[in-house]
Length: 250
Image (cartoon, rainbow, N blue to C red; front, top):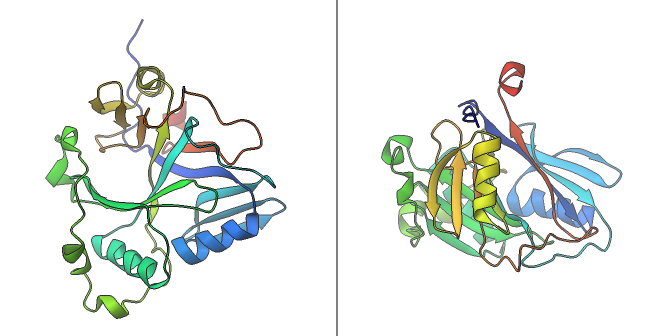
């Protein structure tokens, strides 16, 4: 079987579409708590993003409920342009009492985690400068986030302004809960052409285009038998892989 050509190095992630139980509730959360702007709203559907670029698409399914442990979205990761932007978002979250699920230093990045009202995982993060980690992605780890250092990016953390996530915020990666990590690697690497950047046994793998630390993460953590969420549940509907032009797509 011929080797799969590498996906174009300029490939990036686009909007993530999720099912929600109450559209207006979710719009309020993504506007007020996350800091995204409403770009488009129609019957049972809304798109939110930064600087006019849709990043999260909400699809209403009244009565939808989360299904813990099902395969699908582990978290979607909103990447802000700078460390100062991440610090400003954290101050906003503290000021408005946004419940957080955790914070971590991953060597390649610094990250803050939370859940939306439908229990969809969200990461807000910023990358460390690429020369610090390029070629060393296997060193990705989970350590405590140095809050003093992060907040030191701001002149006056207590009164730092926050007017929403800044222009340049994008969907840095998606992290998926899967039933079989090896099968997921075969799909994203051998079928789609992403490069395997790091592998942690049968538990997790990270794949990317163009040498990035990861555009797609797959793990079997808390996956209860690899069962998919049933129809009508609050679940991932799709994640978008954006190629730079028609030639790369073809």
